[in-house]
Image (cartoon, rainbow, N blue to C red; front, side, top):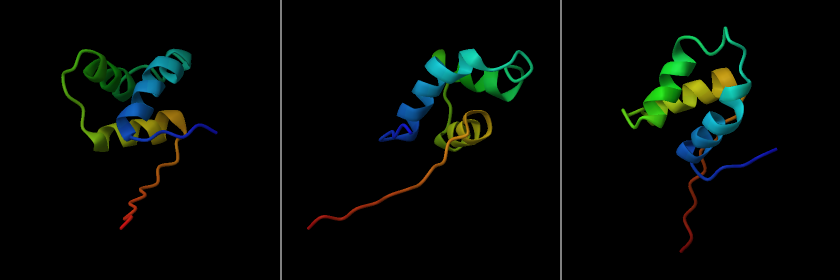
Length: 69
């Protein structure tokens, strides 16, 4: 299991490590558009990154907020 400190860090890892392993069919449409938007800095929302990570990377996303007085 791999843990990331942010959605963007996880997405960056997905682009570099998992996207290349997707089947040609999976690389069409949403996945390739999201990857290109990220790589070419055209803008991609955190919401869209989460959707891609869950759909194409089998990620489990949890939000943890800690207050330490």
